[in-house]
Length: 142
Image (tube, rainbow, N blue to C red; front, side, top):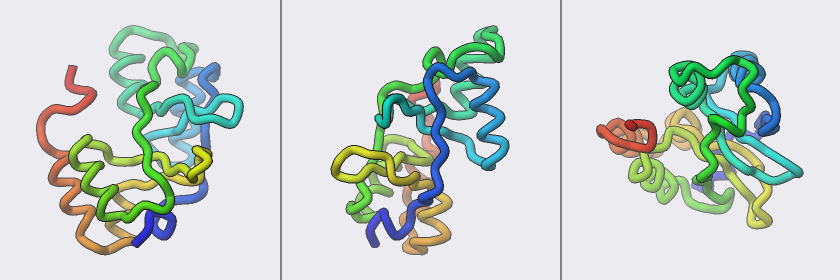
């Protein structure tokens, strides 16, 4: 199955100059734990609820802190024409619960999450990815 068949297409983005309180409010509205950060029609980062909690709140930053100050700039993504099995393996190896989905022109076209793999793809790849993601370590351990 291709990523384009499993991904969520209705994606909200946030500008890096908006504040983390606005990011949290959007996450609450759309019931999501991550937002792609976009500037001038380009993906420049991702911000997660964990970024806000760890890099923002725990570090003593106010709600007015700009998204760019706490977002993750190193963007991991997949392409819409990739196979979900391949992407799920990468998600496990990199310990990612969700990935922005790009077209070959590097434009954001969706988000692929473990939930998408579990509910739409129904191939068992979500279980394998979750097993890898749940291992100790990862980008937010320090």
